[in-house]
Length: 87
Image: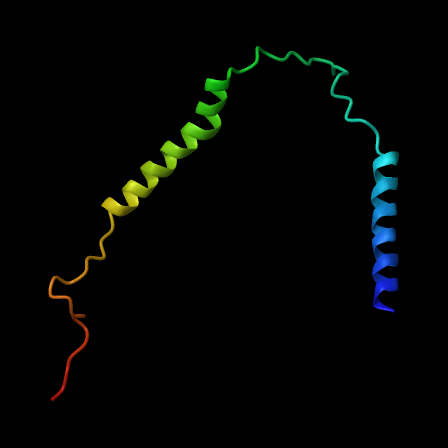
């Protein structure tokens, strides 16, 4: 009985997906809009610099600032200063 329900659900999902793909209109990326004036394309190096290099540098700068400005220093004795042992 479980196989029958699974087959029915799979068929319904596949049919729905197929109908949505067939009924959707194309993206019309070829047709130009009014006022559309694209500039020259980016090279591979420019693309990698903008979308990989700049975010990586920003991450490293922020991480470095956080580590450099961290005020919580561990005690040099290795023991917690707030804990008092009673004999």
